[in-house]
Image (cartoon, rainbow, N blue to C red; front, side, top):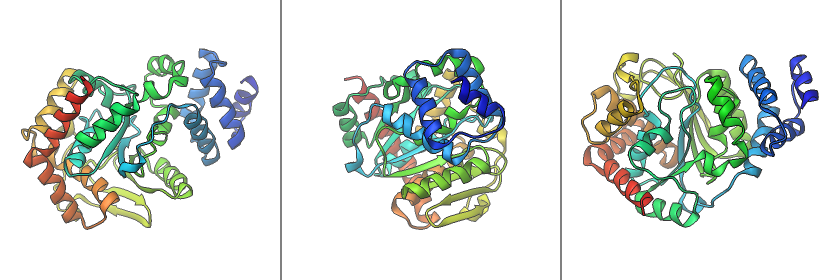
Amino acid sequence: MKEQLQILLEGYTLSTEEAYTVLSRIGRGEINASQISAFITIYRMRPIRIEELIGFRQALLEMCLSVDLTAYNTVDIVGTGGDGKNTFNISTLACFVVSGAGIAVTKHGNYGVSSISGSSNVLEYLGVRFTSHPDALTRQVEQANFCMLHAPLFHPALKNVGPVRKELGIKTLFNILGPLVNPANPTHHVLGTYNTDLQRLYTYLHQSLQSSFVIAHSLDGYDEVSLTGPFKLTGNKLEHIYHPTDIGCPTYTEKELWGGDTIAQAADIFMSVLEGKGTLAQKDVVQANAAVAIRCVKGGTWEEALAMAKASLESGKALHSFKTFVSLTQL
């Protein structure tokens, strides 16, 4: 590891093979915490390169516990996190709106590192028990149109990285890698990034994978469609900057997307939205992100996708999907 750290500290980049080897060694517990911290810090100070990203991703996928749910034509909706905006759990709520609209979701998520409440925090608080058992996950997808792939259960090789990330408390290259290593290998991906450089990197990677994907970035720094200003979407034959009014939505303020100061507050907001009691801003932002996923899977116009998202939320189908999922995790 010392050799690779020296290469990086001198301003050079790793080849795909070197990146693969480094992350494989971290996964095998061969790298100590100080070296992991140095390694993480380097990638906080300079952008990751596509060759490195490919190698890191390949290593993580080979070490993970995979589950085959490709027969269900699923989508994952996930942001990198690390945007520092402390929004409520928009992408997780969008997942249930999408599942309520009849599209299966295999959500890959984790506890918050640089935020108060990650997807795993809020779901666990609300009674979800995470599992890696293929039969249980299949049953959840079939009956709730949703399953949660809690990252620590599927990426045990990264158990030594977790404490270092938590102590640093900043976005790291693992924020970047997380959305790229869903163990269920969904057929569609809707990913959010906190800057345009990372959006471009994700786009290059997914073009090489020939997957169905949309990468979202709000130009004022959100890793999702925030409706606080213009946002850019890239994907299969797609690269366009939209203003909220272009999709029939108002513009909202950062304050209106506040996610709470505790996990309990985040959970209250989460349930309020699902129960139809959320503010107009909360509902519109969730529906906009759900619409991105609906269009990724089904195509169609913004108007059609937003109508499907709104119907899912207002009819209670999104809430039903959530409640069914929670009950299935407790079996």
